[in-house]
Image 1 (cartoon, chains in turn purple, green):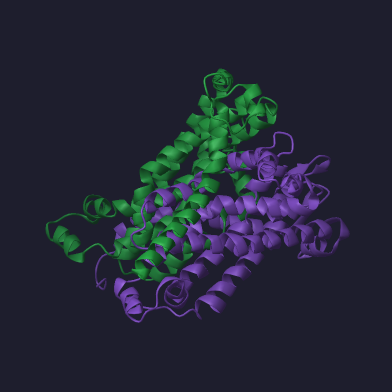
Image 2: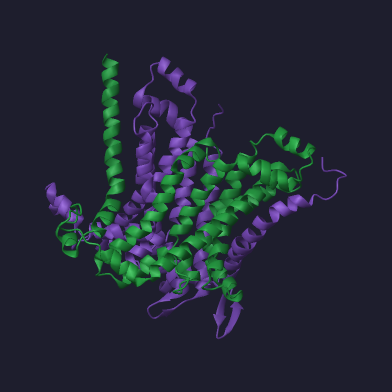
Amino acid sequence: MARGKPVRWHVGVFLAPALLVYTAIMIIPLFGTLNLSLFNKAGDLRVFVGLQNFVTLFGDPRWSGAFWNALGNNFWFFVIHMLVQNPIGILLAALLSSPRLRMAAFYRTAIFVPTILSFVIVGFVWKLILSPIWGIAPGMLDWVGLKGLFAPWLGKAEYALTALALVSVWQFVGIPMMLIYAALLSIPDDVIEAAEMDGVTGWSQFWKIKLPLILPSIGIISILTFVGNFNAFDLIYVAQGALAGPDFATDILGTFLYRTFFGFQLQLGDPYMGSAIATAMFGIILIGVCVYLFGIQTRLRRYQF
Amino acid sequence: MAQARGNIGRSIAAHAVLIAYTLIALFPVFVIVVNSFKSRRAIFANPLALPWPEHFDLVGYTTVLKQGDFFQYFLNSMTVTVASLFFVLLFGAMAAFALSEYRFRGNTLMGLYLALGIMIPIRLGTVAILQLMVAAGLVNTLTALILVYTAQGLPLAVFILSEFMRNVSDDLKNAGRIDGLSEYRIFFVLVLPLVRPAMATVAVFTMIPIWNDLWFPLILAPSEETKTITLGSQVFIGQFVTNWNAVLAALSLAIVPVLVLYLVFSRQLIRGITAGAVK
């Protein structure tokens, strides 16, 4: 169709603004950061050091302890989301999509509310609820006779990360719920009716008919969770500060990057090591996305209706 | 008969689970809002009670409003969110139209290039973004934030909108061409009004992370004049950590705008998700 026609300037005009902003503010700085991770400063000069920053990050005892700690914590953070957030999201979506359920719109709207709140609010309110001093949580546990179970969860190194991961689950459960709900609604009625004719109803209908059909959506949710978790920062920062206390027990890659880049207490900020950490995060996210795209997505069976 | 009873039982169980989870979801919001209206002693003595007249106290709100800066923070957040949203929707829709309407060399590649940003978070480029903004003299300006958020929102906007634009009837556009409309008029007059529901979905998905972001305001625009309300309330909490009335009132004020917008758009949101794109 285009052959022999004059140059279609309007295509360029339509594309240019988005392309320009996206390339200049997102792509170039991203590669700039990757590039910067190959440099370090010697005196006042900036010198090319190859992969030396990464050797330092992964191997030098001054850095590697903090890095592996943050990476391990980040994995635990992700595992909790996969084991708690996504199953709860699927369960809620399955309940919401049951036909003739009253007040479905109300539940849907209410359960999504935490997702729209800012981390500042979420972090502060859960600190209040779990605080041993103000203590809504101890009071409520006392009320049901379980006061012995209470511990200052956010203050103890062994519980703090799990507690914060659960707070994050509380905040974001609305996203898997909405996406799975949409996927369940898009299953055609005749498929469900055919199942009912064959006597497949209730939970067995969910497991045998609906779950296989929504597997692609569950795949998308898993990769979104992965990217979101390995990029997380805000909740830890507002709840525990940049030092990710107690004793770095809640330090994840985002807070580690922030501390390294900007410095804290007596340590000065270091853009080169900061870039190296950002590059490592980029690598981890890229591996996750590739595993999803080539390992999982291609194997999921898709059904055309 | 037995089946009917089974259905009722199942429906009661479903409601029980949903009500329980709704309570868990709304409880913390309830705690903040209720306590923001109480006197200091009542907050501590009985955090779960409603603000009955004997405990009712607006001291938190008067403290916050006397601070004066809060209004400025709110305006900053509004400016940044509205401006970014405008550019994301305009530029995103234009690019989506180009990708879905015209065949040209590199079309698919361009689509993939723009979609890259959905998976790779813009935060990873922060080090270089800060250097860029320092070089451009844009540190501590709202412009820096608007640029970053526009870039951040574009990938998803282009992706969702181009899915929707593929469904706009070709006959309509061709009729417009026969009538002598330019490609620009076809886009602005014919196509844009038809994808309004998709625009609303994109608007919600774009707006929430921008309004709530702490990372970029903290790094690019932490000065007093450019603080957003999210950063402002974080700093406020730090300063007034013992003045719980003020902190709770500040948080209540920060919840309201985004909650109202969400309630306005929530119908549109679920319709947009179900209608396409994220299947």
